[in-house]
Image (cartoon, rainbow, N blue to C red; front, top):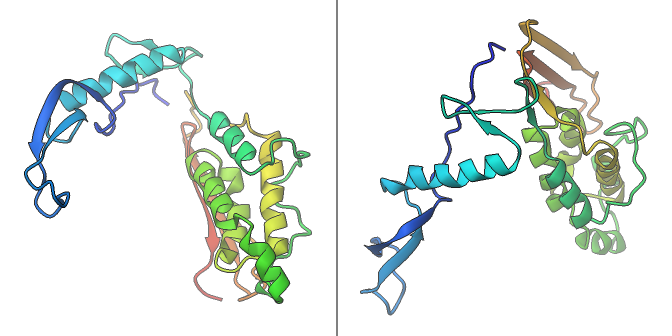
Length: 240
């Protein structure tokens, strides 16, 4: 919003050490039969003076390879008029391939109105239970939820619905998850944009009316932005 420089700070554990570091096994975590073993490390650890430097070097080289440039303040800024973009395009494409949805027909909405999901759609017969035991429902919802939390607020409502049936999903619940994948198939390039905005704080809130068919609770969703930065959530209300 004010065109400040972005300085990246993050965990140190992914840096590659140039020196060999030796340490005793910590108390309570000893390999049986090798109690006297001294460990030789090449990965950074918290507490080492080398850790922040080695992680920054790795991060620095990656950012340059992605088309960013270094500012006088040793910070990062994109090359597109000071705007920063948060995208999970690569992750989304990998997830689509993982669940064999990379060639699915795209749809225009995260969850169509005809999906009226409830617990009555959970498996009722042994045949349905056996079928759903082979469906990676929890893994699929978890993968979609990671995208929603990081960069895709448009998935909040749909994932709030399908995640209610993680313990015992049925075929209709799985069709709804596949619909979300189809929506991502057509919107993989969508991203969050952060930049110079004078709009100040802007918020949007909405809710349905007793949209949850099981407990007749309403679902409330909101998104707030300031300077292009956004926070969002969609969840069932706590009371009827």
